[in-house]
Length: 61
Length: 496
Image: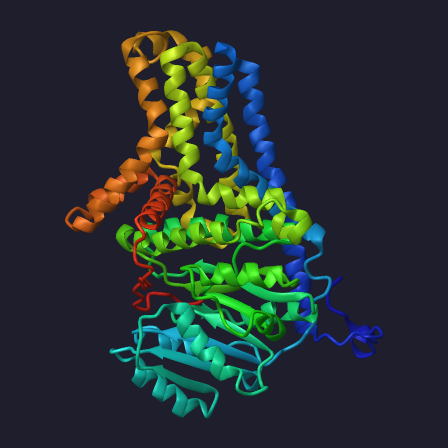
């Protein structure tokens, strides 16, 4: 979703063929999909921290 | 020959890191969950769901649980609640009668006069009744104390849009309010054991367990199982999960469907609950022995990675004993190599600890805020100190070498040697200490001491000790009795 439809878009929004989901359900699925998609990025942040510690350890010793 | 023995001993030492390394693998797989496109086939559907609530003396929690079901954003006409009163002698029968009268046919009372045959038998009692008519399309089995968040069932049921999905389980979170230190440890454990591990199993297309507290089973899958749950083990939920997958269906964990549960708040109560789980896992390991690592025969359930994940849980204490044995053998045969193996073990463990703890706090930030302190002390203060030695020992030695040597903490001094010996023994020693901690908790006179010592010994070693307790109970053929976890209605206001 690119945000709520505004103005004339909100009044004449045309559903795609086969689109039978309610707006609430669509928002929920998109929210969950975004969350699942963010997990890898969150883990990469932790990996960077570990890489820094290991690099420091190798560098000092 | 000596070299071969040393290689074997170092291998034994490193086996002590197997559990945490497998934990890391699970977190990586959880991160890759989106690659499997978990929402590609969901549909906005609201199947007719028969909810089964086994209840034995659940007067303190039952009414609120039933209310939470009808307060969900799910069409009430698509819900029928079957409460199986397993010969309760508290307020439970009265509460069920009130709900039956008030809900106008949406709540059904199934009273059993002969109780105590175990949870699976109680659920089967309801399943027989439910299958007498053609109404239901799915069965939701929940514990009497769990509170479903408003969207939990809708989020689970949407996966039934894919006819390949035979069962869906929710994310059960520890919801006691106010939580004590045991509740908080469990809260953190559930981030790793559910939010991360079960997403990883989604990525592998092989689930170990539809959580008994909140599992939704498709009618066709249930009929494939003969319409009843297996009653021969203490892990009826895990057996059901395996059987559904072996029947050709997929099983999903829906991490965004939140369910709140009241978990034990003492070590003794936790021990009783988890020994039952550990015994169940041991029984499942043997029962499905032809599944492990037989990918060609059984598909994803037989993948080596899934077998590794399962083994890291079931055989966790054995890895610790193996590592301690290796460390001690090296200590007395080659001190220098012993120190190097020790450092490598704790460097590996330290990196894995940061990865697992950091990812846990980021995967579920709500639970992370409540339980971060317990996450930090999950391995215990002593193991945490060893992790710091593994991670920063060489740096400390390089910077403060002389000062440490003058204190006897570095070099060949007797204090340094004694500390090394203690550290070598601690992996297994902590399991024994956790057992003593449980005895101390049962004694019931030193609550504050138990509290402090759990942080010192660690929740991880406690889980290891419980697993050993499960082995012992199985080996001595202890009665397969259903030891119910006492619930008194401590779950707080829903936050999701």
